[in-house]
Length: 263
Image (cartoon, rainbow, N blue to C red; front, top):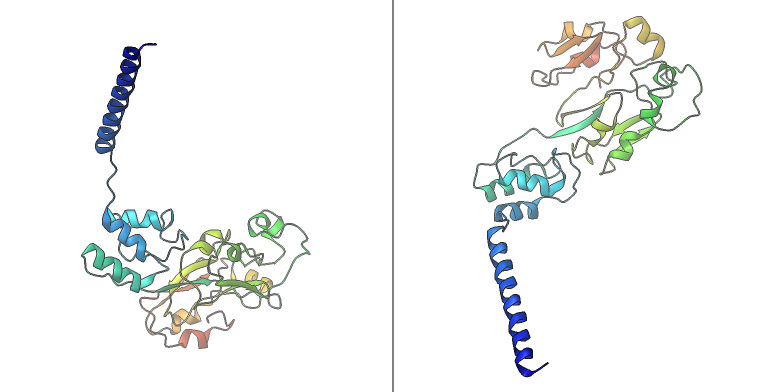
């Protein structure tokens, strides 16, 4: 190959490289995905637990949603009000106040109080036990099975099985809701952290049935409802529950409950 051929080949390669570079440069500009600076700033103040308690796929998902106005600035249950205030400042809006919540297990049917129908030696999984006869060995089909699916789901080590029943550590709980979703019997709910009293039972059986199954089951006797001065007790499906917006924490319901179900 002569010198002319070499120069021609070099020129062609250089021209092709130049065209490819120009094409990539234009494509980068045209298809550039712009990142909202606020999104990055919000992600920087979120705790980074990626627990999913906010309803989004991790902290990055929540940060993107807040930046787009699709989620509240205080949507992170782990960060609480302090993080919500910082995010509100980033977004240039007024900080929203919310009620601090905590998980609560609506059952105190411990091994010494709940009757059992048979010995169980199967899978130690709440979801699997729900399919065995009677929904588990405990006589109460509504009670905590105590096999710890909620314990495994909690990313904050805030819930443990004690004497056959799951118990929440209020101070460690971040109200992410993981345990709520993990319980196949729907025994766990998020309640106000400041709630003075809670009904620790979920049984919807009639009184006589509940009495045979557990020493501490709600029998819907309505003494709590009749004596509440604030009309804060509701009886539904043979079960008492508290309206926390009306409850003043007077403690009368706890005193009147014959089964000591109200804590």
